Amino acid sequence: MLSASHSEQTDVIIIGAGASGLMCAIEAGKRKRRVLVIDHAKNPGQKLLISGGGRCNFTNYHIHAGNYISHNPHFCKSALSRYTQMDFLALVKKHQVAFSQREHGQLFCAGSSREILNLLLSECRDAGVLFKLSTKMEKIEQGREHGFTVYTDQGNFFCNSLVVATGGLSIPATGASPLGYNIAKQFHIKVWPPHAGLVPFTLQPEDKEKLSGLSGISVDAIVNNRGQRFRGNILFTHRGLSGPAVLQISSYWQPGDELTINLLPDMDLADELKAKKQHPQQKLKTILAEYLPKRLVTALIMSDLAERPLQTISHSRLREISSRLQQWRIKPGGTEGYRTAEITVGGVDCDDISSKTMEARKVPGLYFIGEVLDVTGWLGGYNLQWAWSSGWCAGQDA
Image 1 (spheres, rainbow, N blue to C red):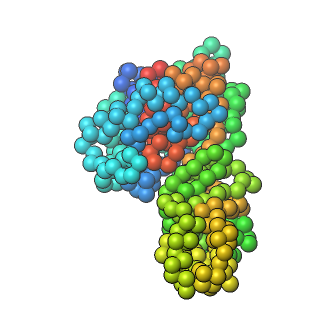
Image 2 (spheres, rainbow, N blue to C red; image 1 turned 90 degrees about the vertical axis):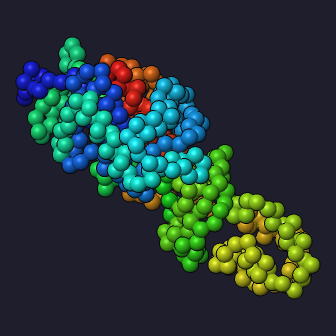
Image 3 (cartoon, one colour; image 1 turned 180 degrees about the vertical axis):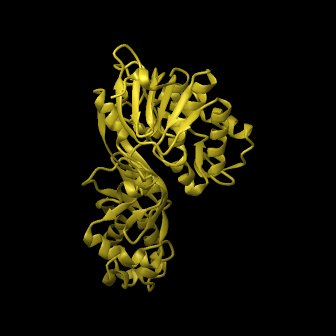
């Protein structure tokens, strides 16, 4: 076994060449620290390239701690205030990357995600950052007095500061693994059980059969669960439910939970149907089709009721119909899992990490940043902003 004295020496090793790792590398390099980024992938920024549908939703104008899920909800405040969305936007403008604003303050590249990756790599070059890619990490040993030795299949490396920027378990096709959680556990740091977030739902067999014909339909709706509510499109798929509102609520959902969905959020359907009784011969399905796709009406309203003229339906029954569409209750069978999840909920316990520096409280010189931590953002650029902010903070200290 090689000792630290037989290893290549550097100041900072960052495990993971994703968004947070690259940001940390840039900042540590600016401080004249010798920085080495190690990643098992052939190329850096694999997940970054596919983010935002290839357009990279790199931040959001409206960043607030309330946009994040964590067992320690105050943890993210310091980093988000020290390196803000406007700070990253200034970097985007410095590199003349064209961008556009979409709904809810989301900022996307006008071109492709590669422009964001290129600006990060350009900053890394300017800061003297070195990379060791296609490199498998085998184990980590902590020095008796200080520092860490990282053993890999491409040699062994000794550093004073070790930064874990390995991400979560989402999208395993990009190389996601539990490595970061295993490192935390090695150093006796608590890890909250991870699960898929920002992920489509699958349905119970009975609901899947009933709703199978709705694949491709998208409607504006409000989805409620566990005291949270999100408004946006929901998309019926051949497997279940997706779309922005569904992805948002999925990060809060727990197995066995029932969702409540308002498919007509801008009206009181019961009152509307009562008013429509001035056209008494119209069938219920004809009137409902003015507001919702016909296939959706057919799937949710019993056929014998849908075929009846409006005048034959009592006020109390109309209220039941209204409730069926505006308080539609459905219990998902599960989620599509990490394969399609955009983020991982849970992770390294923030109570064990300094909110200012991202350093482990019990292990001097060991840092955790980005998705590996128990900080999960909403859909809309919040997770990348957390990567920039947490990476920046660690880069000031590592």
